[in-house]
Length: 104
Image 1 (cartoon, rainbow, N blue to C red):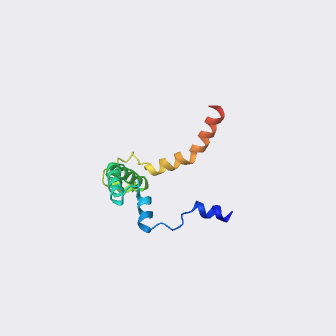
Image 2 (image 1 turned 90 degrees about the vertical axis):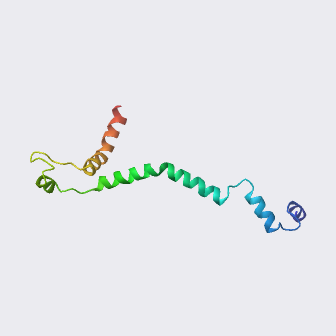
Image 3 (image 1 turned 60 degrees about the vertical axis):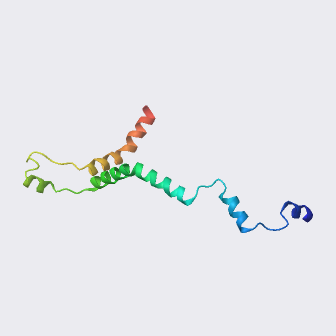
């Protein structure tokens, strides 16, 4: 049995240069990876900016009294923040989904 094991492995270990050649065969270089990452990042950069802007708007805090004093809101108007709407939708979503699954 030990004779069979020794026959399946090379008699002398591979040189580091041989290992590097075998490992790098068909693999992209760091420069290629960097270029591809930059290309993808540039392509989706505007989406990431829009997503971050929307998150900031969702968390924005506004003062309705200050807006009325600045005449940006009429006395009979109010402002419901996107964050409040988002929280209400997220809170009630499981109830509606359960209803749709049961009766839909």
